[in-house]
Amino acid sequence: MKPFLILGIFLGYTALLFTVTWITARKANNQSFYIGNRISPWFVVAYGMIGASLSGVTFMSVPGWVKETQFSYMVVVFGYLFGYFVIALVLLPLYYRLKLTSIYTYLEKRFGFWSYKTGAGFFILSRILGASLRMFLVINVLQVFVFDAWNVPFWVNVLIFISLIILYTLKGGIRTIVWTDTLQTTFMLLAVVLSVIYISKELGTSVFSLASNVIGSSESRMFITDWHNERFFLKQFFSGMFITISMTGLDQEMMQKNLSCRNLREAQKNMFTFSGILIFVNFLFLILGAFLLFYARHRNVTVAMSDDLFPTIAFNYLSPVAGIVFLIGLISAAFPSADGAITSLTTSVSIDFLGLEKKEEMAEGRKTKTRYLVHISIALIFFICILIFRALNDRAIIDKLFTIAGYTYGPLLGLFTFGLFTKRQVNDRVTPYIAVLSPVICYFLSAFSVQLFNGYRFGFELLLLNGFLTFTGLWAFSKKLAPGIINNPL
Image 1 (spheres, rainbow, N blue to C red):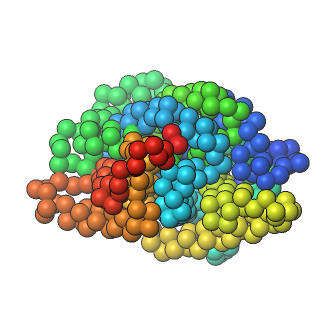
Image 2 (tube, rainbow, N blue to C red):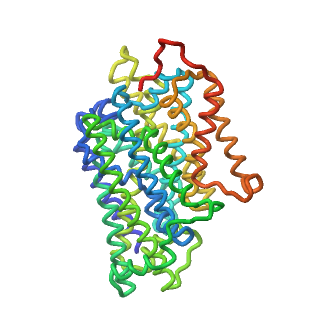
């Protein structure tokens, strides 16, 4: 594909995105930005969350992952399903009962000031790192296939991408994102389906025949029974469950969309519907990965990194139409994770650290200006992080993402679990030290696990260990509440 064609598609897609933004952001205020005035239709939120959950990481890394890990990722996805049920039945009722805008306000009500700031701080760290990785993946593809041909520096590419996101999220926030995510999910899923069809045609066989070959091959293996292996199926399942609870249920970005629904019942319907569809969509991505692998073997296609398999085949080997489909799908997968991240981080900083929601004496216009400043500042941090990741791009993006999640979401998991399932009061001032020490311990245990645990290697279950260590530390520095004192808002 010619660089001008790729750029034209990108600009056309962006124009469509801004049309939706113009429609949804009119008469928006701060409550529109934070929680969409709590009028978002649940089915629109459910559909749009598919794109936000998958992102560019799933679009490129999961298909490329099939060569090394076969279909073992599906066991993680089955764990996701159980995690979403916990969110719908335990966390959402809590958030709606307390009428939260930022979910980390719960920690202040339950434990105190320092626990509250610790939870919000770990979310900000987690989301900045994770979203930056997702954005880097997509921007890097645009750099390789478009901007390198014109000798445009990488930083200029990053600046353009982030500037576009700022412009269409600055005013409408969640109210805009709910609808733009719906548009982007549609294009992303359409791209996957069409890519499967194009690959099967190139190989001269039907989709069903090729799918049958995939199911009968070694690539379709889901369950790894060697407990030493980092992808042992039980570790995969429970890790998927707790990754979902942590990265969705304890994540302001994902919960902000749920809290924009009209009421708890609609938010729960959204979660149940979304989780069921997500099982099928992830399986479709793995099927696509197997198709790409078969095609690569047939045409002797080799790539340096697994993340490069899909774009290399789409742009260099398939028809121009297939390349266009891939590009639209990639852009559609990139924007939801980026726009939602910047919006949720703006919400967390504005409410959890600047306390704008509590400053009733501050004029609404001044609050809006402060929010704008926070929004742009966070975008600048993203810009810096993406440039750093460009220099450190040496392994599969999805592994980086989940490794980071294991370290940064673990303390959140421990904090919320302790608050929900115990009736003890923590030493609030000690909480930050516990939350920092737990990931440090996990890092050293993971680095030396082979020597310490008879060949055992940690995988995604590192998140569980991290949460457990945080929970244990909180228990060690806690006391039982005196009779008659109620300090658990659940």
